[in-house]
Length: 338
Image 1 (cartoon, rainbow, N blue to C red):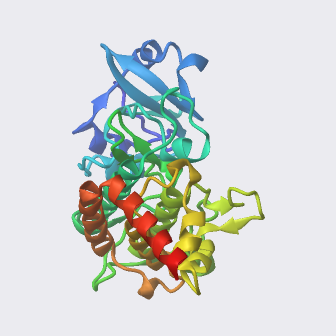
Image 2: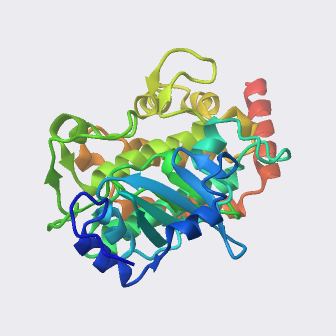
């Protein structure tokens, strides 16, 4: 393979030499064959295609511009809940990245698109949702605390959480990811004038001041957690179609004031059909509310979020749906007799 020598290529020559050490380098013809010449039939979404290499599925993403940053981050990262980059190809100014294949598409597809991939699958269960939340927190905890230097994903959203065949979550799309070096509990920070992201997931300090810290990932994670609870989009009307509202704002109205548990029931995704433990849903909503606090210093660190979700998952595994039914019956009987 000829290494590119000009900056007009989508990958700098230094970046490509660095990447070659640990990744497979594909020929363009191999990718054409694996994707059926990038056929519409194999298109997953946007510029991402399903590919088959000797019977093994992969995803091929076509990118323009310099992507050496994303490659160099992903080649250093090795975690079950982060999508694995296995190889790449540079051809005519485009870079083709080859990733592990996530059979069940994105979390966004399942929560918001009325996913019809499997006729029998109506919706993600409470157990699946808690497991997905813990997986994503695990990935962020790894990025913030176990990589050196620490990394901030910067673009966490339900569309960038992919689900494998067992509905285990894989965080993807590291195109905006940054390393942040610094001391203190909250890791380092950077400032940028180039604020990019998706409405509803971007933290106030990032939108207003271009401040990049690990706490911006915590904010975005809180929004994803609220999506898992409510089935609603980060920005949009509720299931009754009443007005545009940010989930990060809506959660305060749910958890403050009177009749909190009743308001929470109405907030929860109707696709769960009340098959969830209300107490644990409340704990999860409280955690999400802390994550989307306007003041970044009021947000928990992701390590605390991960530990809390691990406890919620453990309690979920002990949860017996019939107990909840009995409890709700006894509560209604008690209130009737008053």
